[in-house]
Length: 201
Image (cartoon, rainbow, N blue to C red; front, top):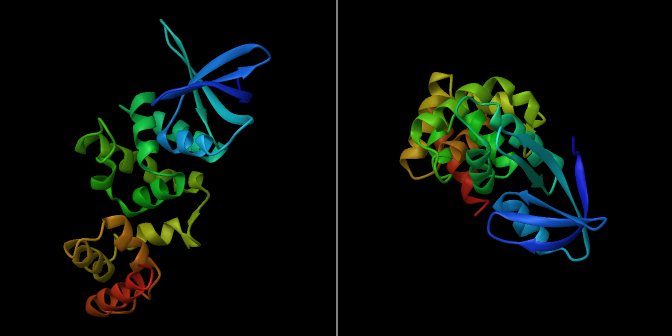
């Protein structure tokens, strides 16, 4: 029904923003990431929107860009994930970060989102892993499929496990290992990945 809203901000709190359009102010629930981005803007802004229809309410959700909106739609399509949990996840992760977490199977990181437990996080991974193409296919120039593949091969899987033992998240470790040749043994993968990650610090 609503694709986007363009207007000026008339109200903002920790979970929502109201945009005045032609004399009518529309309140949109949104993410921390969107709130941070619009706080840097002045004057007229545009939010991409999704209208959620319930028996007792019509709730409008607004996002700074259409990629975040598409991720929101993917998340609410997951069994057990409602709009509130989807907003919590997208407050914790940008679309690229979420794609990386899903591709690497890093359900533990998803539990950082408020109100999302281990079982729900695992369901997000399970149901979205087959939809990696919907995340545009690449993160930081690396194919999401190649990131996903490192969790399935024995040597790369062992390298990712070793890196997580050293304190890196599964998503970080999977991204680093996916850039390397799968022909390397586990020790070489870990050593080379550590060097590449150190260079980005």
